[in-house]
Length: 197
Image (cartoon, rainbow, N blue to C red; front, side, top):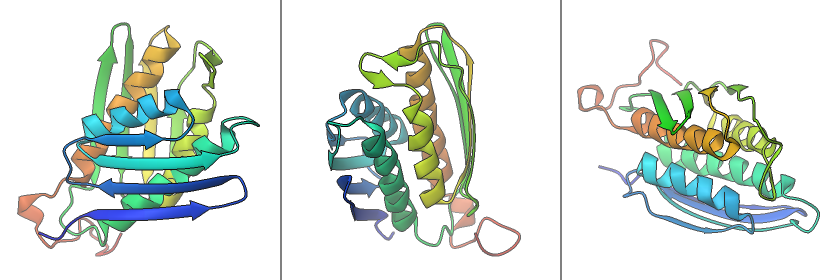
């Protein structure tokens, strides 16, 4: 089986990022981004997606976290797309419901080749610690645009913003794992009636 790995660098006036992924990993994560709460959430993706992630970023966090969070989403999306290759043999679709105490989120993903983000998360707080919760939309929009996926994210209930966000990221990791998994019954087959994705 070919290795499904990639390393992507993105260098702008606002951020310098390197993201390395192994889609068939063990869930290990190494992060140095300057945004600790984002790193905590990226660790959820790695552990629940069984994807090895190594992400480093030198960003303009002295201004705010916006560029760092958005550009990490972009770079991670590029790395996943590159590691995935032609998409033959994958399950393509993934979904997960994940609870954390009072919070419950659902994430559904399709490696369709068409970027679309539908996100319905009514955050109960604008910030978790120093982190602006609105930036998670930017993260997922960056990922969606560059991984070329359709992504639906719904937080169905919850009143603790940390729990809301964590259930989203755990469910995202689980949905990724399902969608990216190689289906032994589809070996070498494109999972689309169009013959391309």
